[in-house]
Structures are given as structure tokens and as C-alpha cells.
Image (tube, rainbow, N blue to C red; front, side):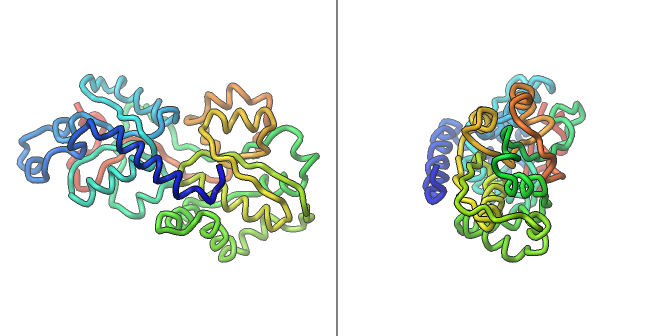
Length: 302
């Protein structure tokens, strides 16, 4: 997808996701006063709904497993999109109403709102993850400078949060990435030191439409452009992203969440691609609620 259409894409998925949530009714639950006087359980307050994201995401698979593991028999995981989830969270938070969403870190919502993860004593959501860089086989021979830059690429959740926040505040992804690269020259120089210019060579980077991956992929694209590459960004779902790198229709991705979210894809394609290592540490997955909600654990949802 042309990245100039990112805003339209996001609006489209917000509308589509919200349309899917209309049937929930008051998905943020009962009023604050009802919650405070204990008239309803947490489940009743949110109509036993957990607001999810894209149906194919690994996080959704884990959330569904959590419903089973914790025997939440009356609960439903609502499919939608990351954008629709964010809109639902924003509305509930503004009105100080209860809501439960699928969440991951890094994500801009933790900087914008006071949120907390529900404790996961059964370990359904697994250990903290890493985001890794995956490239097609043969990239080192055909694009040595790009290969070396991608192998060196590593940043922090705080770095990523700057780019994500700028995009959420209205900057185009390309502009937010360019601004971060300009302001982070010391770090970027580590990624590009002594690399030859590759003027005119083309590269395709695949990514999923998560705020974190939009940020990282556009930053990498900006750096590769400075090395002379013509970079095409392919915005796809997780399955096609992995398949594209495996079959060579995409050159690389910096959006592989392992060892949990994308492990099924890694197991399927590991012999057809190359893992260049971790580009970001400090990720987390789970169920997230506003800090004002009087709940601490997934077990409390019973």
C-alpha cells in the first residue's frame, strides 16, 4: 500500500472496526457511579467484552487462550483492528468508564493514558518478547549495504515511542521517521558507518499496520534511502509479511515478534529466510485496563 494513503487506511479501519463494535452497545460498560457502588461485577460493567484487534494477530490467539485458561465462560473477545481498539479505549478513558482491551508494549497509548496490565498468573501471554529483523535469503550478496544496516539496526522502546507519538499527533509516518533520524544522528551513524552507497538499487520492506511497526519500518526506510536505495513499503497482514520475505517478494521486515506472537510463522518459514537478530527489547503482551479500574488480575474477571 502507498504510504501516502496511511491516514485514509487508518480512518477506514477505524470505521470498519467501530462498525463491528456497534452491536456491543455501551461497550465501555456501566457508569462510573455504578462501578463505584459495587452494583455490578467487572464483567457486567463491560458486558463481558474484551476489545481486541485484527483477528489474525498472535495477540488475539493468546487472548482467546486466556479466556479458556481462566475459564471465563461468559466472556467474548471482540475482533476489530488496532485503530478501532484505540478509539474504543479513548472514548472509555475520556468518560472514565471501564474497558478491557488487548494490549502490547511498545504502544503510544501507554504514554497518553494511565494504564496497567492485568496480572497473568497462569502465564498464558508468555514471556516478554523481542522484535527481530528477518530478511530473505541472498540479501547479503545482492544488497550488502542494506544487509549490514539491517543487521546493525537496534533501538529502544523510548526511541520508538517518539516516532509513534508524532504519528498519532498528526505527522505523516515519513515525516515522523525523518525527524527522528535527523535528531538521532549518533545512533544512525552506528548503523551506517563505512557502508557503501547503493544508488538506484530497489528494496521492499514488508510490515504490519501496527503503530510500532509503522514507526520502525519508516525509520529503517529513511535510513536506507540515505544510503541511496529506492525503498518500497508493503503494508500487509502478518501471514503475507512472513510469506513475502520467505518467497523473496519482499526483501526484509523489522517486525517479527518472537518467541510468541509470530512463532507459528517462524516455524513454518525458518528454512527460507535469515534472522538478523533483535532490533528491540522490552516488549510485553496482555490484557490492559485503565488504572482507575479496581482490578489487578485476569483471575478477577471471574
